[in-house]
Amino acid sequence: MTAPAPSASGVRATGRPGPEEHYDALDGVRAVAAFGVLVLHIGADTGGTLRHDAGAWLLSGGAIAVTIFFTLSGLLLYRPWAVRSLDVATDRGVSVGGYYRRRALRILPAYWTLVLYVMIVYLGAHLGDVWTWLRLLTLTYTYDPHPWWGNGLGPEGLWQIWSLTVEVAWYALLPVTAAVLGWYARLRERGAPDAGRRARRLLWAIAAYAALSLIYSVLMFHPAYRPLLGAWLPRYFAWFAIGMALAVVSVRARTGSARAARFARTVARSWGTCWLIAAVLYGIAASPLTGPADLTSIDTVWTSEFRLLLYGLVAVFAVGPVALAPAGDPVMRAVLGNRVMRFLGRVSYGVFLWQVPVLIGWSELVGHTPFTGHFVTEFPVVALLTVAVATVSFYFIERPILRLASRRWRAAPVGSTAEPDGQAGDDGQAQ
Image (cartoon, helix red, strand yellow):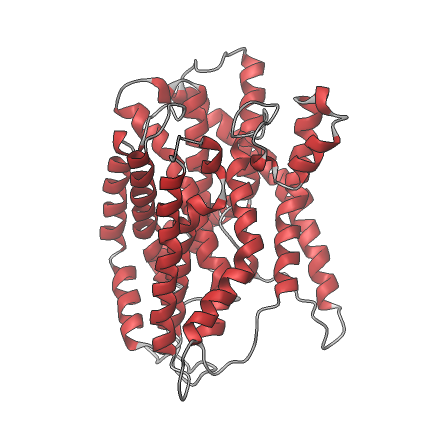
């Protein structure tokens, strides 16, 4: 084997993805998460989560896919800021304007198409309601304490979008969050910059950031349980923090720390053990410890906290080996970075967006009432239809808009702040 080439900071790189590089295996993780959400929704629609057996608990555990999405966002979107903090030889900052443009163009056009469809097909009585349009288009409807749709998830056809509202709130705050973390990493720094010290301080700060979720979850139940608060960002800081911590370790391993590189190499090579642990933890998390299988009964503060912890641990062991492996790792490439998984990862945002409308449409077509049916026969049909719609969304809405914007940024004058939409814009629910 040849030695890795020195990085810009004068240290030897380890082959892990840089801040603007794309890692195919993470597309596969994104695809698995998108189909995990689909399993949950079809399980609920067919009544699978209403039974009192092991199958009901395992189907309800599909909610862990949301944790995977948030972890991926923390990993991929915080990584450029982690590089800025830890690669002490670079003075290149992160363009906040470019970041916001990428996020808006990646998320909103396809989502707005979904909103238009849902308003016309399911919510025709509210077509003239400007307030409803405004809340849906801006992904702020989960902050309405008394919505006309009468639940915390959203109107018909948009039940799955609550997690996207959390993502968007995190996107909006990330530059501020990253600035505070970077400030803390450099606080009281004397003499030459010390990347190792900065990494340790970042990890401690990210741990404190994660702990806010545990505190917030207790407040959700004081003085009484308020389910609306469960769809707000602070509840999920911990799951984003997992990805942010992985970003710090990955960047530190890539830019010169022998200890971090050794740790990353050990985790990556232990992928089988890590995924086995994740599977065992999934079985434990898909149990009464983390709340009711039917997803509608009232939680307790303990099940709420256990869900945060156990779901988070599943994400650590499921995503960790992928995030810390070299970009060309043969196992990750074969299992998660193959052609099929890359394709499913590319269209996964559409899978997430359109799965509920497709499920509703299929149920209406075959005349099957809610909470009835057979999961085994319904899942493959709905999955194929959803992938078909998602493929149309990707090739006719998402990709053309990103390519148009990318050409515009590449054509910008030298010295302008315009940026191409690089793979640094990848995240959990939308690549």
